[in-house]
Length: 476
Image (cartoon, rainbow, N blue to C red; front, side, top):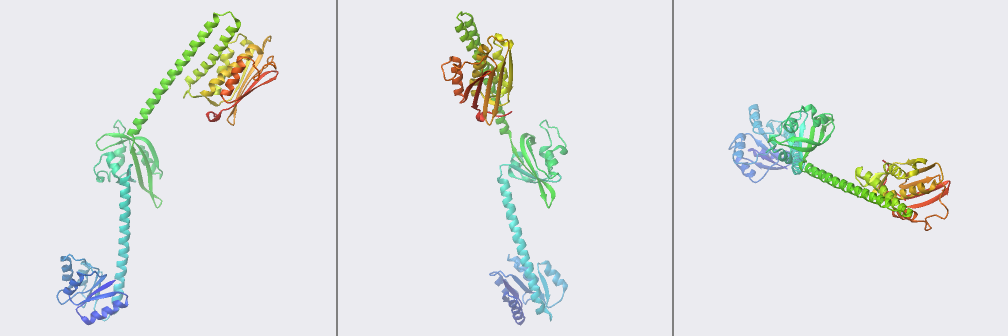
């Protein structure tokens, strides 16, 4: 750090030089204004110690000359042999850092003055560095804000705009930040419904939230542009809190016009798909009803009891599928159904087809769990076969009987039990033996759903079916 000593008294200049070097500064000396100006054209001192009265011009003229030449003015201290306060005031106005009178205390006082100016310069440099760093940080934040696809703006406690990024200006169709800065954002973009009617700021969710120190999210609200048009927006607000005090909020928002159009399109496509699917189910159900009617009419034309029985059994199987189709047709997604919603109706439909239904009491203990249509179709036919077998044979020669149906789910394992208190199934009849089409069908359907079934004999007959319901099931 070099101190330029501009002093026409050569002896005094040498003494000043010694003092400054004792303080750790490098020095350079000039004995005239002209010589100092020439030196300054090549060098840049840390501090300039300037004698007010020089042989060729005074300090004021020297400063003016430097400025006229466009030279940088270093920090400087004025020294003078006259204790005139007017000189000090004039030089301070020109930028002098301090003023020293050349009296008997001059050389003793000078180091302290220079050190004080040195500290001031160091503090100023630190402050300038901090301001520079802050400006760079602000520039970076400004760049990041303007690079964001989301529109962003800030508001103070009164709702006035404190900043906005380019996306905000573009979406709202403003030319420059000054068009929004200082304006109340509620009345500028939020405060009207889509019909153009205004609503008070107290009803604005942004202001309600941030003044309580909380954020808010609104997924669909009308925002107004500068040209009087509006668009649907999703926005978020975040309170700005400094030293525990709420000072405003930052708001980000997006134009969701395209998203809403896409959602509406998807909604319409889903509605159309649902309509088509319902129509398909309806036609299948009608076709099944036609098949059932044809089987009934065909059976009515026959006299062979076994042929009639076979057609009536087939009709019953079609009936079980029709019950499922009807339930699926009325369900939400057509792909799955509650067992509690399906099985009781199916049981009642099957039992209702038999002439001896009046003597049979039906007990149903059905838990509420979900199965997919791929499982329910074979399950329905399987239940139909077991119940049909009970109604045909279990209560022969009896005045009353009880059929109990259980359905439960535990650890993704479904358990279906159908039992009666009838005469029982002979030991000669079973799934391992050739016992007729009905039992063969039950066995094949059980294999189809990956389950296991067994017959338990005792007081009547008990069919126990177990299968893995998997991920398609779950309690409602």
